[in-house]
Image 1 (cartoon, rainbow, N blue to C red):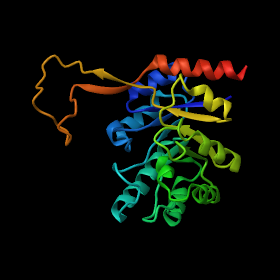
Image 2: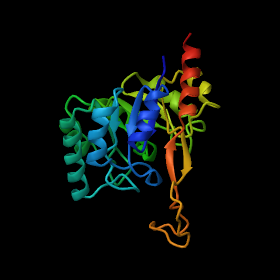
Image 3: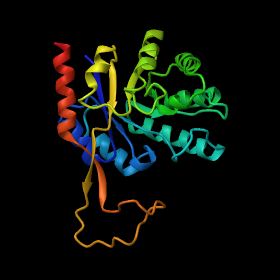
Length: 247
């Protein structure tokens, strides 16, 4: 049966995703940045309170995936910390300046990760040659690749996703970006064995007092009084579709 991974940006979201049927959680911070490394406190809470597999993302900043020496050193430290906490896997990706998988750095990451399952995230979608990148990741022993098929959404990239699935079973191809109940069956019909969804919604702040003329963000239009959260109904609906198609 196809596995449902839900991207969660808080412990509350992780608990809700688990309760409503997620099979695995990608744990992140900073949804507007596309996901950054969670704090130490959130990581420890996840180990205590979530029983399904949790794979934290290791990403020190937003933007591209070509990192400075200092950023990469911090990533290796974070990989070691996640391993010491006992997580079964992690999510990461490093590219070189020419848009290829940074093989020397990824070898260091694989060594630091040890027995953890490594997911190469959507840095893959920024690669100059996705087929070569797939082969390189297979050589490294990466467990899976999260991809939208190098398109803005996985639905638009479904032909490339299917092509990658035909290329081999390792690494596994996990489709992600814009997957929801309304288009999920297309991925199941294409033979996708793992799907990734944020199943998200923006919720209003509980703050009664508000200062609408001030923002803490570098984006002056950012809404300080909304937060991103998992929609449990959306998770449950996707899980029901997957279960129904498996019968």
